[in-house]
Length: 106
Image 1 (cartoon, rainbow, N blue to C red):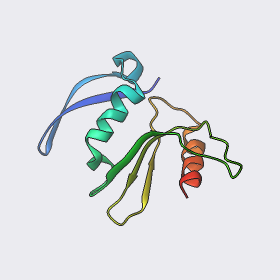
Image 2 (cartoon, helix red, strand yellow):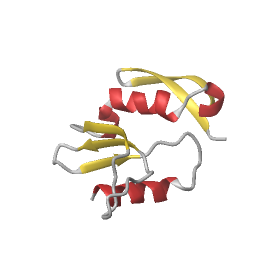
Image 3 (cartoon, rainbow, N blue to C red):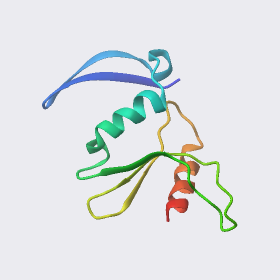
């Protein structure tokens, strides 16, 4: 279980509100974390623009649809794609998923 600290941010000041875990707090990747990132794209970097969320329109060279679902796809201010894969805990597969999605968008 990954501990989290929820902070109240007021300008440059941030105060801890509670401590716990995403699961214990009831936070879900798609419902809460992903929605927050989409509504606040500045957390991904200055000038980042969200292009799609839950993107799953991949297809193979034979035309078969893929099963992978990218959490958030964005563009940075220089036009480079930004691949975002969100997890609530310590999921060892996140690196492989991010690499797979980066390859698919390339």
